[in-house]
Image 1 (cartoon, rainbow, N blue to C red):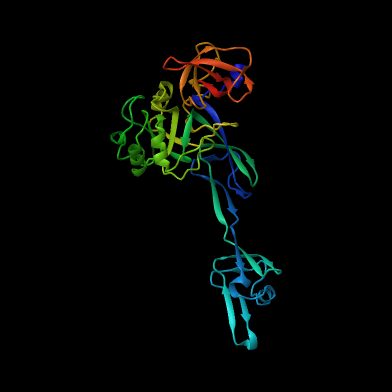
Image 2 (spheres, helix red, strand yellow):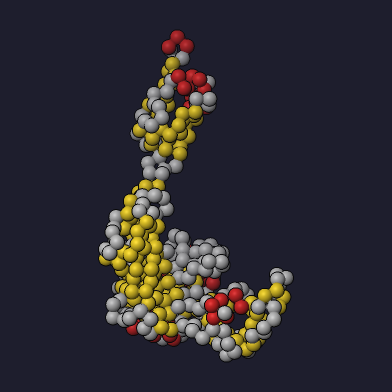
Length: 371
């Protein structure tokens, strides 16, 4: 049971990955079951309704609502362009005329006759849904989603920022413990996923983005460098929607943690291959991990499997995934069978772990993952 309840980051040389790509609103699916797709292939399309712009005609023209309704030149359902006449009010003895024109393009969504207000629905936004991974379409929910099956390598990180990207893996000079500075960033890195070392400097991250790299995969990162890169303090709930030019994936945690040897070795074997990456992270319920997916046909699913397989046991290597020891690797030294109270007042199953500095801490079992 402990194995089932204790997650571990997956580092798999060969596996089957299924990705369901879903439109945010009902639309049109552009592929069929059995189609082979590439990451950039458009598999669905929809239109996101535009915002509503309220024209407050009585207030704008200084007239009564009934006068505004009487002077309307449009009705519900009419399409108007910016500058079109929407309302004209003729004053006393027809000596004065007041006109109001559409400030934007749109469609008349409603006419509120009690207030004289007119709602213009702005032009809808076209949405294109891309495959994200190379693979085969194995399922379709008409008008809603596409499921794509991809065979290849699958690697998870512990934390990331930035959304979906696609590029070629390129290993940086130096080993897993090498600090990534600006001198490690190649000039010809456009369209590449840079992999290697640990604790990149802010200047290195910015340089990678400047030369056109799409992502960087490192062992750990300094929280101050991450904050400076984003321009704000990042919460730990959900990431992946940051407006950044470079996706950053951390495989081990914060501080001075080297890129794990098993992860480094697998990525090194994939040097030069095309990869799909996503920095989206959710560390609470329904955990989502940043990922690197490399489609390949030269390995069988399950081949080269690495990661947690033996469950919790004395001596098992783990990573703590909650503060104050977030990202720290440790070794299990005790597995008390009884429930114990924790800081919140709840009673839960815990374990005792030895940190790299020799300190022993008690941690809820739900707050660790196997390495």
